[in-house]
Image (cartoon, rainbow, N blue to C red; front, side, top):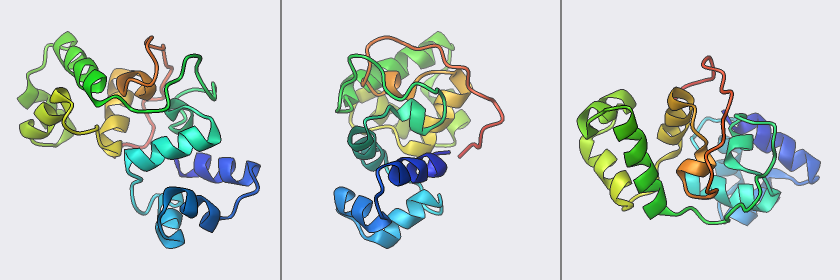
Length: 158
């Protein structure tokens, strides 16, 4: 999903794992687990790394070859993300309960995402992007225009 890209980006900057861990204010062992995908990286850490490496989430997820979009915002906007998730759900004529079933989460979790109370968790964000071919950066409010992605449906699902 993202481990290989994180390794490639770290190597390109000639950084050691402990140096990247320091950027995230975490232990090196935890960061190692992110690169190996033994532990799923929280979206806030993924966003920090995207900003540090000057890349988009879509690039890290290997949804696009474009490293960074124009007018790229550094912060995730939970309110915009919630609105866009709700629009996506409504466009696909799904109730919160049906959407929650697809993602294998509770309806309450979907409601919290849509209200902008919580940021969409990494595995659910990835699954939504794969299933609906939607940009992670767009969905999280980091870019304003939807980008057409050619996402391979055989990508790893979480």
